[in-house]
Amino acid sequence: MKKLIFAIFCVFLSLFGSAQNPDYTTVFEYKQGEKIKPKFYGALLFEHQSVITNTKPGLEIGFLFNNAFFAGIYGMGTSGNFATQINGMLSNNMFGESGVVLSYAIASNKPCHLGGSFRLGYVSVVGDDEEIKLFDDLSERNVVEDNGFTFHPEIFGELNLSKYAKIRLGVGYSFYSFADEKPICNKTIDSWTMNLGIVFGNFAK
Image 1 (cartoon, rainbow, N blue to C red):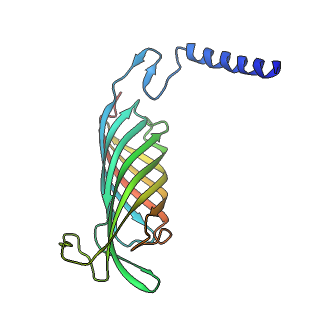
Image 2 (cartoon, helix red, strand yellow):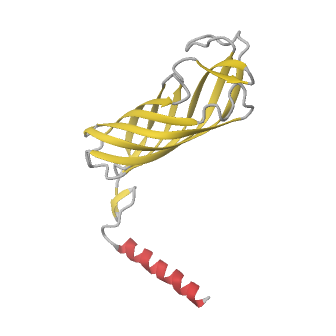
Image 3 (cartoon, rainbow, N blue to C red):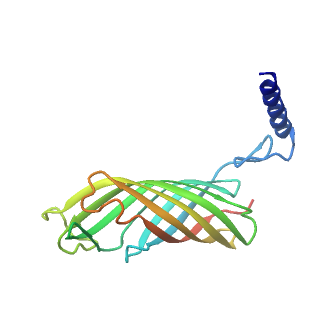
């Protein structure tokens, strides 16, 4: 018991010493006591999944802390119909998703750098035995609808184009969980993804 108390005391001292270091920083400040205001950022997204032939365009907006930590919301959807087959039945599908995204860029002031992110979103799907086009009126069609959740972990590389723009290229994996698995089975579109993004903001300190 004494050894445990002593170990906790040593950890506390090390953390206290780090907090007193004038060079100690967090994602929300440059130096201790020198807080910064979050900056607004926006991004155009283009995601391609290995099991879907259509690119999913989208938007992301949020706040940037210390030019490294991104926290925002996003929305995207399929740009057209894609087909799946469950139990021998062909289904033509379109879906959209929206949710929250957290990202962190390492050494973001360097021209080229790496980072990671994850998105947690809500998914809405419609399916029909006939082709669905982007602006079709589905109110009079007997479509099947389903809702669920998605999770996208990703690693990415960024290229600083200017003080106000970055190009981001990422590779990740998409996990889906649908309530009824109609018209899409959960495992049907779980797949690798490639993501291209153009990020805009004031990235100069």
